Image (tube, rainbow, N blue to C red; front, side):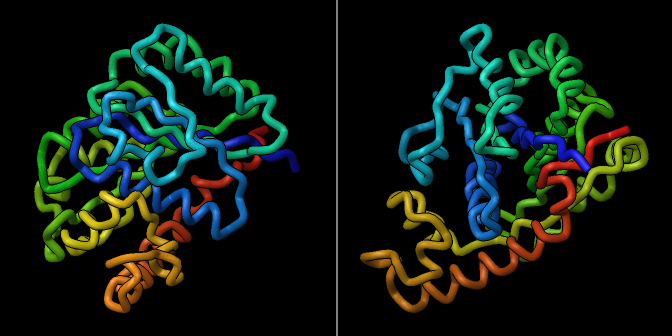
Length: 245
């Protein structure tokens, strides 16, 4: 059966929710599963030391505010080397994305491409409102993955998200999949971000300096194992999809 290519679009919602942390972990999961991925970064305003390209130098950078820039997504259709494209959007990038979506999504969908919209939410109500706003635009034209990031609180239960009537409606109408991005030690995150060293590099004992220490190797192994387990549970919306009849 023919496979549809998969485009993963990280929503350009409220900044500081851990979107790049999650997308980098997702790309590591693809690498571990030997899935060739083409990655685009439309977040040109993000500091070089905190953007996706800082961790993955092969990521292609685009200016989302340049008209037509999102047409780069169309290249997945004829890409012979990659069946998955990952897109990291800039914060507050809704307007250009929504405009492009209205113009092009129908056509690209008919050419054998499945979309997954990824929203990272935290305890901050602003991140939750943003996720629901993007869903109002994309409607049933994409699959949805909600990543609930515990940030600095390992006991975070996402009460505002779970108790929202709008979330209940979202779940009922669009059936989003939901996973947890566990809280990580802030010192670990700072060292990783400053050095641009990926989770697997640390876990596999290939990092130099402080991140080469045993404590961080063991922490990284645990973080990697648990986020990979979460991703395995939703892999059907992360991998190329079965062609729809």
